[in-house]
Length: 346
Image (cartoon, rainbow, N blue to C red; front, side, top):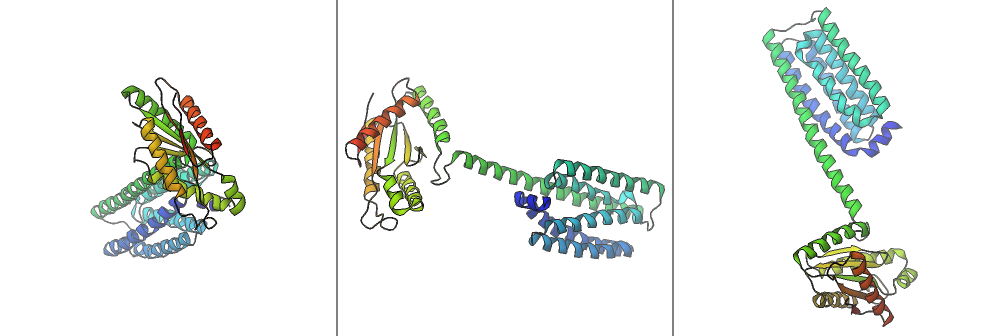
């Protein structure tokens, strides 16, 4: 159960583990040739078994049988490391591969289980070292060959750790970017959510005051949106919101800000824009929405319209004040028949 849960939570790790099985199999193929050349047939044929085990683990990872795959990988590395040290000595460097389990345990296990297995791994590691001190290798090879095997093993482990490190950094960075998007984006319209847009607007107010540049806001509300939901259902209502978000975005400049402010409300922030220009932008948005062909989404000949309130930032004014004024302008648009733009100056 624990492994299954982790497999769902850390899919990137299992993908990396699957790739490592491929790399390990290639390394073992190379070892087969090396040990045959060094006249160490036992270790050579051990690598054939190792290739088969990694192939099986690769298949198991692909079938999401992660528990089986991990057992195969652990068994292969533990047995292979022990055989390498017993047959040709500690200086062969086969113990390096045991260190690969340390980050894997941290990722795949709960803290308690990871600590227990780390202690056992440490005991196994020390046990192999103690064995190498008291018992001579059963199939020793020349000193030059031993150095070559050690450097080869060190290079492989160094390369794998580097590969895993780069993959980890890339995965974490990608996950952080995704979390930031989720924290700052409205999931339906993919616009800024209210919290993030508030932060951006506060920063824009500070910039406008510092450089004495005008700034205006549009508070946009969909007319009779409840009726759309009641007649066609909330799924159709969601589609309308998504289309509106795209259409409004098309009428804005790249550096303009737009976010979903409420259920059917949008807030547009127009940097370096006075109220007259902002009113023109609002009218352009209103006209684009009312003239859009909604027949694919709603009842034939039915249109979606917007009521918009426009306001410009006054000197030393807070965000709440400019929004309150835009809201009053929006209310005037609603009370005067909807599908219109109203500007309200301080």
